[in-house]
Length: 103
Image (cartoon, rainbow, N blue to C red; front, side):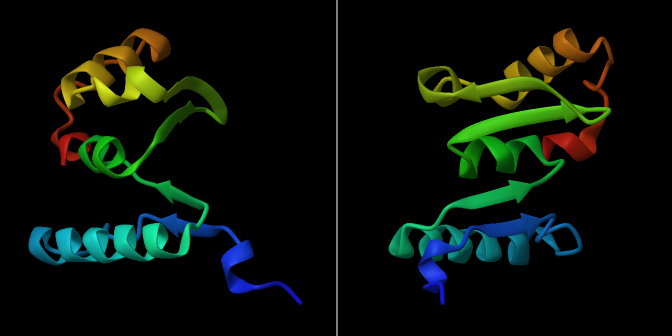
């Protein structure tokens, strides 16, 4: 039998259908639970602002392939615009006008 703290948590777009105020509260509560219990968590999101604010490692995928893996000091310095630029460079796609990614 596994202890619940030994199991990773998968958060798949867990704030996608929420209004901004409720989404912020859910993210705050999620962060508290993860930190308090030292949980390994994978958060899937299209919101780059949330990815930067709540993740300690960013892995971006396109067509099932990892095209960016950002962590450590590089991640700490990122803005949403920087991340969009890196994603555009790696993917060859333009996303700067996609406001949904900006959060």
